[in-house]
Image 1 (tube, rainbow, N blue to C red):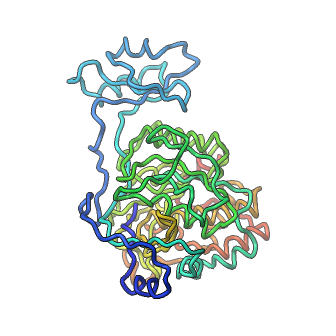
Image 2: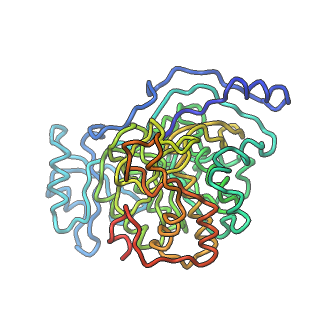
Image 3: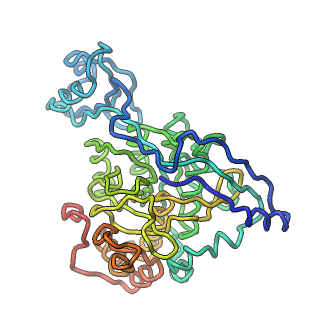
Amino acid sequence: MKRRPQLPHSRQSRISDFGRLLAIIAATSGVLGGAVSPVHADDKKPNTIIVQIDPSSGMSIDDINASYATTTVQVVTGIPSTFIVQPVNSKQDAHSTADHIRHDRHVLFADEEFLTGSIDGNPSRMGAWGEPTPSEYIHQNSAGLLNIQQAQTISRGAGVTVAVLDTGVEVNHHELDGRLVPGYDFVDNDPNPDDKPGGVESGHGTHVAGIIHLVAPDAKIMPIRVLDSAGQGSLIPLVEGIYFAIHHGANIINISLGTANDSAFLESLLTEARHSGIVVVSSAGNEGREVHQYPAAATCVVSVTSLDAADGHSSFSNYGDWISFAAPGESIYSTFDGNGFAYWSGTSMAAPFVSGQIALIRSVAPQYSFQDLLKVMQDTSVLINKLPSNHGLDNKLGYGQIDIGASVRAAATGYTSKEKPKHIKDECFR
């Protein structure tokens, strides 16, 4: 959930002067057609249902198909006892069929398939150059605002793995060299989760991964491709990606994408992640209003809204009492396709700052429970609700703006609190 990366003309000229500019890609017409283009609740794949059978029931998918007049389209190999089915009769309503199946005592979950995706905008200008890390990346405004360099004197995220569920990650990007661990591509169903070029959302996952790397440079990144280069996906690759991350060593899962649809199957995997000690972080969405986006609004997910450089709520960013934290999300400078770097804006850019923060805290305080983690983040955050720029948003921007430096310092001293964090349900701490 973000705005397309931009390379300002003044910056373009300076790079050219230093001989560092290798490519400037001219603006192209927008496929999504505007600054905000959300995936709506009625954007569903017709007649497609994801079904998970209780393996102890003794039932087979053939039994389910015979009972509900469906046929198997796909076996979901990554998740046990899970199948994609569709009604035999094309005029049969998949929504009502899914409702009938989910009430079968032999079935754990049955959800109608729906679209997921990134939310936003037209490509403008992109910069790609191949020299070592530019100072704009390390010393950008957000790094100072969040006290990242102070935090890195204590922890650099060693021993922690962050799964990035997105458009993939450019596996040969020099800045990420030595930091990637094996992932998977659930769009093309192969073990190469590279960020594919040529689409209006190409580079999104690479940009997100670079922000995590900026905050926690010694953390490992697990690229999991669940969106294509147009920024489109669906429930199936999303749940497959979460399941993969849970069972392949991720400590944190960053999901910078969203949908208006909730899903019991999705919620169950998010619960499994929490019970496995994994923290899921997700972007709030870019519709600029008080509306839920999933998985950010799901139970026990750390949801992140976007701020500008003056701690003001970004006009494009969603808000509400379900938000956990706020972080910078405008003109963020990070890794990009073509072994380069670019600016990009959106809640997609805010979420990985929080994922990186959690990586640093996990590295220095691995004993922390989920409650301990959220409390140290909450108690060190900067209150921003009373700022004039955030008028009318009381209790709708979470705990406030994260302070990465303060939270890591507190965690290093063993800070704990018996109080439960706000904005997260009690069931998340059981």
